Length: 448
Image (cartoon, rainbow, N blue to C red):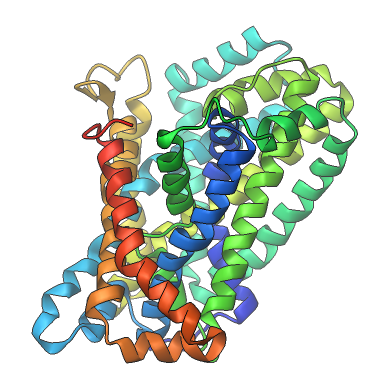
């Protein structure tokens, strides 16, 4: 049992911190524009508030009922004849795999905070050379920032729920919202603002097809940090009297609003500079730094704000990813929180070094297997296989294995019988079928 509990606001900020990550700021805006703008956003909003939120509520329900680590949660809540479900709790291992490459990216962000202060690249060619140089040649700089990221994450988690995780999220999440608010006010005054709104929200049916639906469902699912025991573990430190449906809705809303706002900001700046948006790292680490330089003094300030916001979003996610493994070791193996934290962090840290090196010219051939290097393999295996499997596990357990009285008592008093029946139907049928479809598409087994 937990002596330290999240407050309701603390849980919402921590869970939102987990959900709001790099995907919101560099992935969602682009896939929205690429898959039909407004019509995609509508489908995304529908899926995030039905499918994504259903599994999210399922995870919160499990954690808040057991107040234990992920493995003990399944062990406790499964019927006596189905104790093999305890192995479902080991989905927390997915988080450790994600942390390996995710922290490498946090290292890049730290380097770009430094670049914002010292010398932004003056044009797109220089910006591309700078990023590719960092990625492929500058092992030392990457290694320093990567190590600093891990130390920050480990120290925060070692301090526990109240003094570490909640305290940091209570600072970083409001700061992130304030920074994005400042950037949005600035974006509103730019010539590219209306074009950004058009790109993201104007329904373009030519770009929207059946594949876009799967993309929307997939991103709705992945953006909420479900399927790797993170939300379940945070919910284990939640006070019993918290309305889990309302708390879940706040987290989902915050996650979605931040993704939309980030898109408006990024594309307002990009279109004002006369550039077309590019994907992921190229947009964040090549296009934007060069544009910020062209803005002059205000650009340096905006660049600093933007990369600090990105760092805050990434760090709060990374902290949540490590917590389930630490809690498991602390409770099941009965070792101190500090030993559990530094032990798991060290394993992920060592694996991450290989992921980092696999991008470099010097080691890429040695660390490339088939069509992907180790960094890309870690990303692919976690997003295409392990996270969807984790989501399916939650859906099946909550929908078919868990005693219905447990879910009924947690949900009906807050939102009524009708919503409970809808939620249960989505959890049992719609969510697992949708997630299986995503998984098959990601693995290339079905093509749409």
